[in-house]
Length: 132
Image 1 (tube, rainbow, N blue to C red):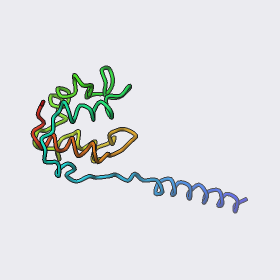
Image 2 (spheres, helix red, strand yellow):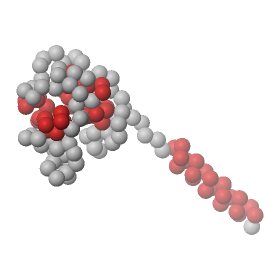
Image 3 (cartoon, rainbow, N blue to C red):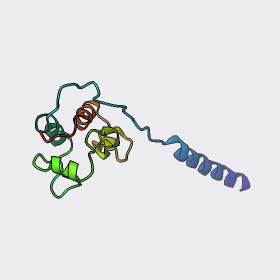
Image 4 (cartoon, one colour):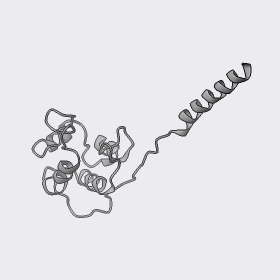
């Protein structure tokens, strides 16, 4: 009887240890994505299509969904007036913290960091986050 209790208790402890230490999140940190982009990026031509395809999806960053509203007509104002973008300072812009995994949840949700998305948005912010 005593041996059976010790075996069960050992099994429970082993399972708890596996759950506690076996599962961990690996965060992806991207340093200065987009620094190699030298052409001037346009919010309308370069950034809006990225946001529309990856963020302004049903149930996500759309009217009535999660803030910021990243639909084509609202994205610029939502990002800049909502404090998500610090012009010329992409490393301290909230949107970049989410996109690079430095802030949770990592965006795009379920997809994780995307180097092409990150590079364009980083470069656009670094270029002054213009509404062009």
